[in-house]
Amino acid sequence: MTTIAGPAAPIGSASDANGVGGPGDLAGAPVVGGPGLPQRRHLVTELPGPRSRELLARRDAAVARGVSIALPVFVTAAGGGILVDVDGNSLIDLGSGIAVTTVGNSAPRVVDNVIAQVQAFTHTCFMITPYEGYVAVCEQLARLTPGDHDKRSALFNSGAEAVENAVKIARIHTRRQAVIVFDHAYHGRTNLTMALTAKNHPYKNGFGPFAPEIYRVPLSYPFRDGLTGPEAAARAIGIIESQVGAANVAAVLIEPVQGEGGFVVPAEGFLPALADWSRANGAVFIADEVQTGFARTGAMFACEHEAVIPDLVATAKGMAGGLPLSAVTGRAEIMESAHPGGLGGTYGGNPLACAAALGAIETIERDGLVARARTIGERVLPRLRSVAERVPAIGEVRGRGAMLAVEIVDPGTGEPDAAATGRVARRCHEQGVVVLTCGTDGNVLRLLPPLAIGDDLLDDGIAVLTDALETLAP
Ligand code: PLZ
Image (cartoon, rainbow, N blue to C red; front, side, top):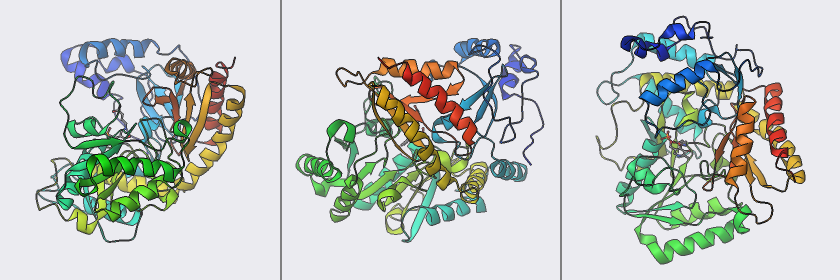
């Protein structure tokens, strides 16, 4: 069952009570999403259209401007690779709400499970009176995350919360304090995770003071540093040993492919060398697989590409088909270092989110989405690389599976070119293709299509992007 009856809009309901706007504004907008939506790009107004502009005006008067918007079209239904807006435009989604709707929006097994759960009960708090869904998700995490050692998991709501808890667990386990993070890292927006995140603006500027005992070392960034993986690891380890001291390190925390920082794939050998060093020195090796996890890179977890087995894995995003859920999973002896009552939160492992996760995981496995991520990469990379041959402003095309990026530079100097990157993204947006940008210097276009997208729609989206990239040719 994928049909949800009822009014379109939580959008209208709140304002109704205030006598402003109302659901009538949205009459005629589609309310049923999921894979049944027509899978084609179709624009009937300029973007944003008049209804989106009305909602934008309401947004400006009610929503804090600190929460910004990349593409100001208000969505009313989504599914497969399509987002439908309130003006009736159908856009191609190459962002998955930042790597979340891996199984597609309103994926049938997610919808079915959530409907059944919402009708049964919505919340008890697992720490008060538990329920099976939480345990079942932890069992799936033990089965799916790298390594066949004894594991335990704890569930939370957001990626930042998972990363923050992974650090708590590493610290209590090691009785040490220092946390090693990398240039260009992104781990979240809470106070501890702001400190772990590299980029100042917009994430950190003015929001300090930040947490202590965080030490940043250079990443392997092959396009910029030209180092092999072992060379880059030796550089990072040298700094850790001389400036922090191995005996002080509680955790080495890294995204196996960096997300917000620029879709940086470290050179081969970098991750294994860091994992080995951590093990040899009694530090906990934590993989932040919040963006890379659950099939995105063409493996269930990105660490698998180099057979790295992390001590702890932080997951979120693609795990639960769009509902907020995150987890820390890891070696039982490390996870069990935290005393009873030391981990938790009111909503962590909410029953609806757990039901959604079980539906999303089943979809990933039954629909072969790990392999689908690989074929998406194989389909898209050659097209982007062939444009790169003609467009010197394309510094590098890179990525793994369905986590793909184009780094844009000034062809004369090789310096990052955020303005040109923004122009390409805007051109795509104007034509109804949702692409995202990232990178410490804002000069990386990134693609995170839902793995439920069909080839025709993907090809159409990539054609719009390659045309936009061609405009950078001399
Ligand atoms: N770790 C690797 O990618 C979230 C952030 C968007 P939350 N990335 C999207 C934004 O601008 O806020 C992310 C990530 C990695 C941690 C996080 C944090 O996950 O669920 O956003 O807290």
